[in-house]
Image (tube, rainbow, N blue to C red; front, side, top):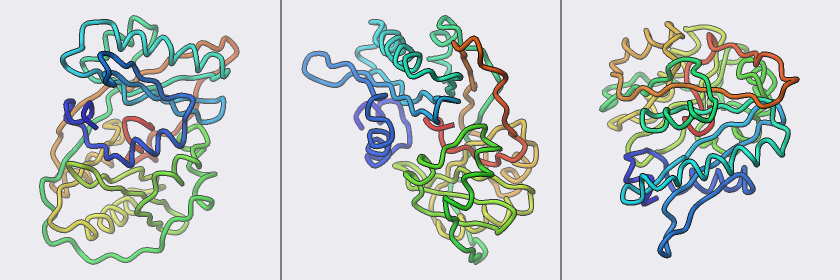
Amino acid sequence: MRLKEAAGWNQTEQDWRNLLALAPEGCFGIDCDGALVATSAAVCYGRALAWIGMVLTAPEYRGRGFARRLMDRTLAFLEAQGVEWIKLDATDMGRPLYLRLGFEEEGPVERWCLARVEDPPAVHLPPARVEDVAAWDGEVFGANRAAVLAQVAVETAAVPGEGYALGRPGTKAAYFGPCVCRSAEAARTLLEWFLARHAGESVFWDLLPGNTAALSLARAFGFEPRRRLVRMSLSKAPEAGPFRHNDAAVFAIAGFEYG
């Protein structure tokens, strides 16, 4: 949490525990001077995909090559698992390192923020059952992330047959996502449901700006852009074909550490 706070990120202690529960063998750290000073974590979605996140170094220990050492270790671990594709969402600080490691840029991913939820409409929706949405979510995301959805789901809702959304708390703002929908109308309903549960709070929403319907919704509800990262990918499996996914149905990602 000390490393996370120094970076100004939104994760809670439970978010760290979720990563350790999901990927105990894929979480790495460097101990220096008796303290944890750098971390990385990789969550595998079967062999199809792994997502790297939480690449952090304490400010006073930067410039010593710790991030490079952790990334080398993480990539070696994923190669041993036979993972076909590896992705991450890169900050400006991390991007040069990832380029040197062979990652290629796919496109931007943005964090939008609503400073305070004011007078949300009352919206009541049935909860989303992970087992009900997992198959379609896998087609959209490109890999089976049912285990991640089940682990991080604190608040859930579904528009039956049209889409679902999850939400969870953060140290700086409530977090909306993931949200996967067949239509912008369903995404609007799910966003209204989430805002109704967080009146008076701040909300973070990470989206792919290539989904113009998601951008329009964010602006319509008063969200403003806060951060821009770059989604990057790497494949070390010669037999791996193109990674197929449908970003047009992704109205909110699951988080920079999950994709």
